[in-house]
Image 1 (spheres, rainbow, N blue to C red):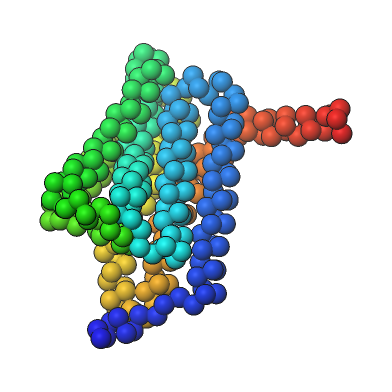
Image 2: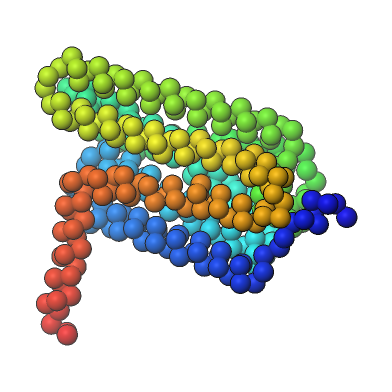
Length: 309
């Protein structure tokens, strides 16, 4: 028996229940907060006319899909460790797509703020609702294309019987050819670097434009802070690309605590970042916060005067 396998400790029943309950409760809390933001957006048509709020809601929807799908897979690793490969491919393709959508969406939000500050006279013409919807379509296309190519490569190189087998649902267990490893590294590094360059460019352009023009300095300062917050979220997305390597290194050093390492890594990289979006934008934006309070109070008042009570 391999020594590292011998040193690995499997979760006891109490530990497994605790981890799954913790993950599910945190996911429900985050999704409830995000659902409240979606409710506010759709209840107040004024937001549907502003591209930055449309992009923000698209980010929230991505977070809900990402969190829900990843929690389902987390629970499945305990209830049904070996999942059918065909079903696993569906989960991987969806989660891979929405994961890649997040940095691209952050880049779109940064560009919108850049145009609003640096080219205010052209903002209404460039950042329109139809153009924003086209951008969202492009984001889904760019985010989904690598996964579709990976699937076709797997279909071409693997026997059909492979997709009827069952195994642990990890991307490296399904898309495990050399092409997949190289393309995953090249694409993710290339497209993350591109988004980082775009964020740095928009931040410094907004910074220098604010210094050159004395008009609306407060708006420019708020735009710089918003782009910086985009950078924080992008940093978390970038770090999550290396969690597999980091988890493997820590598990090799401390094989007995591999389960604990993977659990903590999942909480830090998959759940907590999803909580940042509503805290950074929904609670920080005064206009959105005002309408959210109004929506909640309106519902409360309706219940208070309900004649059926």
